[in-house]
Length: 331
Image 1 (tube, helix red, strand yellow):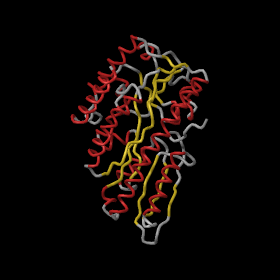
Image 2 (cartoon, helix red, strand yellow):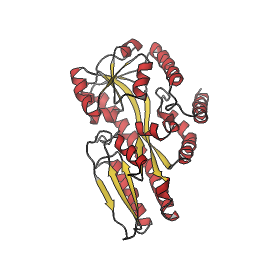
Image 3 (cartoon, rainbow, N blue to C red):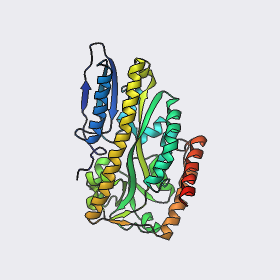
Image 4 (tube, one colour):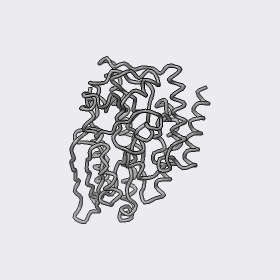
């Protein structure tokens, strides 16, 4: 089975589709390495754009390491015209861009799909009112608590050393819950798991397998900790330089690619979960005590979100109403 490499690639590549001598130019960045379905899907969209615009639009596609801050920064600074922003870059983009990424918010993909069906368009319109056009949301999947030690009870988790990629919003969240975050760079996680610097990670199945973190993992708490995703954006000042027909083509093709990328990622994570089970990793269902603690932690996270992380009143209200509506329909 092939597990997607896109969150942990360590290199950068550039693909250029040449147009006519006076072609308009668009520079985009994505967190996908070479030879993955994800990069190929984006490349296909770009080829369609080139064909539809008769070569009058030249697109340079740069690939970055996953979670690399350089991608978002290059867009914000104008070095790139757009791209797929993830992780910390979402917080820097707009507080509502992180609305789906509040820990403990979602319990299932069915719930995610129900909420996003109505809320995606609202969030994308909100983001598009600023200096960027937001084209779509790309799912990267649920991240779970995975550990070399027991995770069955709240006390188990309080005794764990949980890896976080950097100080900031996520590490503050872990601290607020009276848990212990340990900051390590992405490249140091495997060593940290082996030498005991950390004993717990929060990751999707696909990431854990490709990064080989699963070798030190024995237990997975079988309830989603956080939903992860990215948002395609393009700078408005760039769009103003493009012919209207060309921009409509870019919007249509890249928006379509968001759905394809999301399907790939969900499929990879579903397969990754099955692989972990086959390899003997135990998925531990939360008992009644843990379920209650999970609910208390969820309330605490929302209460203590700092301004930069907390969605606006409008988006928070719509999100919580959709969650309540989902529960009403299922009960």
